[in-house]
Length: 131
Image 1 (tube, one colour):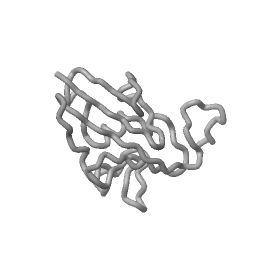
Image 2 (cartoon, helix red, strand yellow):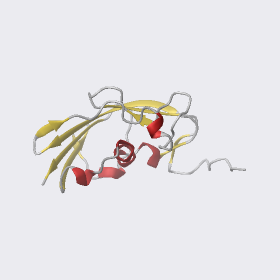
Image 3 (cartoon, rainbow, N blue to C red):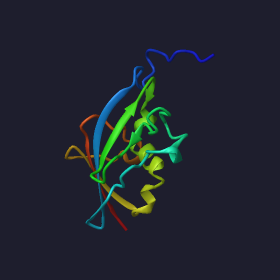
């Protein structure tokens, strides 16, 4: 039997699920790249973090190629569940696929957290990769 999460566990974002939206913009050598539609949607993603069998979607997913990442999960949500690295892993991509140098901005502010960044509601995340 699983024990309930500790109230003071700093990794827990929510114990009652959440529904947020972030935007990811991806540039490689200054050229904008599409963030694919339907990342995390469908039976191929069973096993992805917070996959919901009823909706058929992972906790981090896209619908359109506009970069909107739907952050939807029920129950306990931990930081790692909604990290940028988890989104890329769900997508089947790695930061290394795009370049060895990264300039990252979150809501207009330089950020160096990379794959460890925990997405928040309303974020605009700009990833610019260079060789």
